[in-house]
Amino acid sequence: MRKTVVSVAAALSLALAVPVFAAEEGQSSADTAASFERMKADHIKRLDDRIKSLQSERSCAQGAKDQNELKACRMKHKAEMRGRPDDMRRKGGPGGPGGPMPPPSQ
Image (cartoon, rainbow, N blue to C red; front, side, top):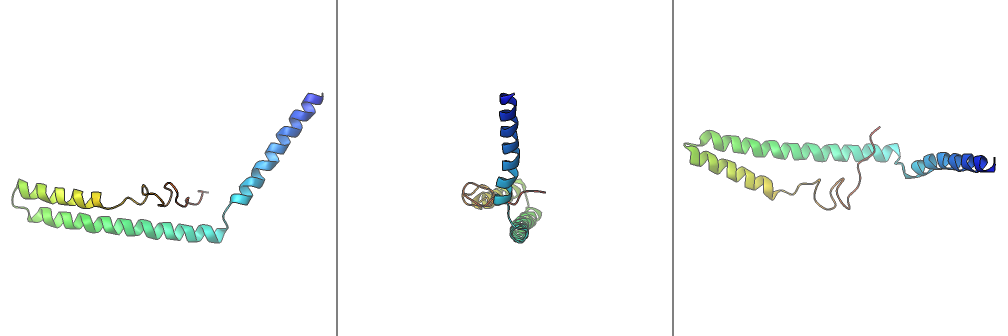
């Protein structure tokens, strides 16, 4: 009997403690909204940069006269893309090691 009471008390303690810890670590809705808007703006900027780079490669490819020029366009684009730091992998980037975590999905 005593074992059952102790087990029930332990389970109840754990069940009540988890929501308390989750509530303490949660972000306010204003922080979450600001974080979302910042992440959205960063993502759109990266997309715009990539589109610009792809359009540049397209122009180069359209102007190519032979296979060697086409290959040079591709190599130039690849080198350009490698030279850019990937924000998600870079230390301190959003969601990366040492960086801010994105808000939890709901």
